[in-house]
Structures are given as C-alpha cells and as structure tokens.
Length: 424
Image 1 (cartoon, rainbow, N blue to C red):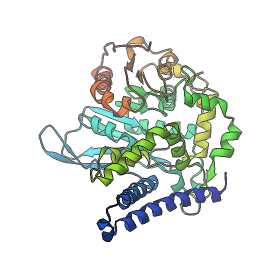
Image 2: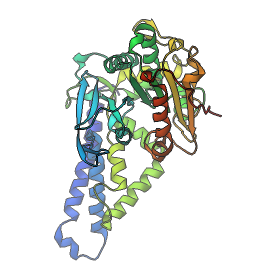
Image 3: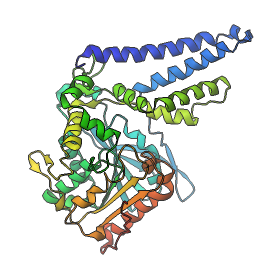
Image 4: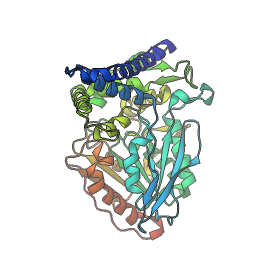
C-alpha cells in the first residue's frame, strides 16, 4: 500500500461519498416531493445532508474560532493568532488578546501529532486564556509538506520542542497532552543538560504513554502484536498527485480515522442514525452537539511515516524513554538531569488509551528531582478526552494545574511543596 494509487483511490472514495450525499440531498429536497406523504424523501434528504457534511470535514482543517475574549473589564477583546516560530512541519503560535495586560503565566501547550489537528485542544486553549498567555504547537498536515523539506521523526519532533522552549524562555509552563508527553519530557531533559537556562518553570504531562507497559491497553497490545514490517506494508502510503507533498511517505489521516471509528463502531453508528433523525425533524443545526464534536473528530491529517513508525518502534516497542535510553541527534538524553523543573502528571481513572500508571512513570524517571517538585493527580471517572477538554478538566484538573504553576513559578523564588496524590 505504499503507492500513490492507493492514496488517490482512498481520496476518490471519500470524494465520491461526499458527492453522493450532496446529490441525494439536492434531489430529495425538490419542492414537488413535499406533496408526497411518504417520509422516504425526507429521510433521503437528511441522509444526504449528514453524509455530505461528514465526508467534507475529513479534508478541512478546522478554524480555531476564537475571535474575541471577554476580559475582567467586561469588554470583548479581539484575539489574534500570531505565528511566533515558523517551521516546515509545525509552527509555534500565540493567542494574542489585544487590549489586555500580559498575563503572569506563559503556557506552552504541546499538541499531539496523532492524526488530528491542534484545534482538538480548542476548549483547552479557551479555558487557559482566562488568565494565561497561551502558546501552542500547530503541527502541519504532512500531505502539504514538500518532499524537499526532508524527514520528520520523533527526534526531529523533540528538537522542535527544544527550539520552541528556547524561544519562550525559562518562565514558561509547559503542558503536554497525550501522545507528546514522553517526547516533551525528553526535550526538557535535553535542555536541562545542554542549555539549563532555557528550561521551563514547570512541566505538566496529561495522559501520555511515558511507560506504555506500566498498564497495558488495547493500544499497547496492538503495538506489541504487530511487527514493524507489517505496519510499514499495511499502513504507509505515498501522498497522491493532488497535494504539495506528492510522493511523501505518510500514515494517512483517513486510515487513522477508519481505525478510530472501528474501535467504537456501534456508538458512532448510533450517533449518525440519531443525527439523521434530528435533521428530518428540523431539530439539528450547524452548531449542535453532534456537529461540534464530529466536525473536529473527522478532521484528520496525515502523519510523516518516519514519525509514526519511530513512535511505535522506539516509544512503544523498545520503550526507550521508559528505560531512559532515548537518543536525540546522537546525544543520549538522561531524565535524571532534570533538577530544576517541577513535574506534574495527570491521568484519568477510566482512560482506555493511556491508562493510569503510564504517565506517572515520568516521576520515577526524574531521579534527581526532589519530591517537593513532583505532583500527580488521578481524576476519578474521567476518560482520555475528559482530562484535557471535558468537565473534569474545567472543574477539577485545570485549577490544580494553575495552582501547580503558581507554586512553582521561578519568579516567586522559594517554592512550596506541591500536593501529591499518587496513582493507586
């Protein structure tokens, strides 16, 4: 499946389904059919509307949609997305709130490169904008990156994070969400040894697979069962002729989405059937709960093949970070070099992707870090999504993270001991 033909056939199938949905909606909505008492035409029209929207969203990068922000003065202030550092595979962007004083906390959100755009963290960004200066890693779709830009694997990802942290300075609070947690830990250790003045003040790791074997899940079991040869043969394709990255080896976003959907096929099927019924009854809207969720969930991006394969091989199979054997650009990274960065881990008790125990392993790797600079939290009843974007994040986790930042901010001088709630 390495050839462009396969990639183009997959895109053609997506495009055909979008066209079928648009055609069904247009034909079944013909005014004359409203005189027919049979509800079939209403159903076909609703099916077409939902189908067209579903397949259209798969190739569209969602907008951040954060245009204004209401500050303490009661006024709406414009929010501008500014590019701070521009790179081929990803940018560092800043949400600048015009007319507002600079906030005391400078936060770098490290978004995952796992098939979805950084906009998946939109609600996380909005919640932190209340009293933080928010920056985020905005990774690019690999299909739009020319082959001339070179490769991009987990070492390159780590070096990108190193450069972003250097750009932001030592008063930064870094929050890594899900997949980048182990690489963000490695980037922090890299700076601790080679450029200690650029270390962030705090590092918060949320639901990430620092040690995938600590608590096995379906994801880690898959990584163990499948060989690298099987993955390369079955998952990797070349970008087709339609995009700037033509010829680049990628793990296609559409293939990733198919895997996601198949894991909970019954739930997704019910969601779409229910949405068709709502459209028939004129109870749906552009911004209802279904469309808000699936407009983001269905928007997928291709990953560079080197990044996907090296993640599976080095993070999950060989557990290089968990064993403190990770090498970046010929330099062996030692997590024990972290001595001046407060580290906190957050896990969800019901997380079936990165189960409790996988993330807290980071604290054991920081052997030279005092207990007063370590903290952990396990959120009862929370799944993977909820610990960074759901009610659990807003009500319980976000206040804990903000307090952790306040207590361990370098400019405050002496630090107080952080509360520690270790995983059971």
